[in-house]
Amino acid sequence: MIGSIKSLTNKALRSLGYELRAFDGGNPHFQEHAALMDPRIGMIVDVGANHGQYGSRIRKILPDTPICSFEPLPDAFSELSRKAAADGHWQTFNVGLGSASSRLDFIVAGNSQSSSFLEMQDVHISAAPNSEPVYTISVQVEPLDAFLDRFPPSVFLKIDTQGYELEVLSGAHNALDRA
Image (cartoon, rainbow, N blue to C red; front, side, top):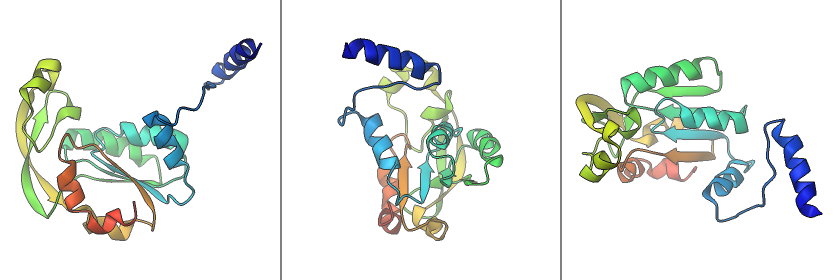
């Protein structure tokens, strides 16, 4: 009986783009969604924004919450900027984040999502040959704390920097107090 009610309900909900599922507190997607629903969050800080995939997904969940995205790769930043341009609550910065202000070499991969300040492991290239490094560019790097005046008292911080996360966190001592 309950199974058929769930099935009929899901059929109706799917026609509207939704689905009914059991809550799984161990599932990271449910955990993220629960964290995003915290009413204290005043901004989403997206480090390693690439083309804006995460920001676009978040915008569907939180249509009015400000987003601040950081992306050092010029081509990816161009796409990110285009997506954010139509959204008055989405700021973008063409800068890498790290422990201190500097210029660093950034390794551009065949697929932009695998680009990094760090050399790519052979196992990564074997698993995803399209991620092989193509060229290196010099990019500006700043600590996240340099942008603190743009943040409200409480933010949701997402970092996806292909292994460079510890360096990002090393430049975010004060920002972490707001995360």
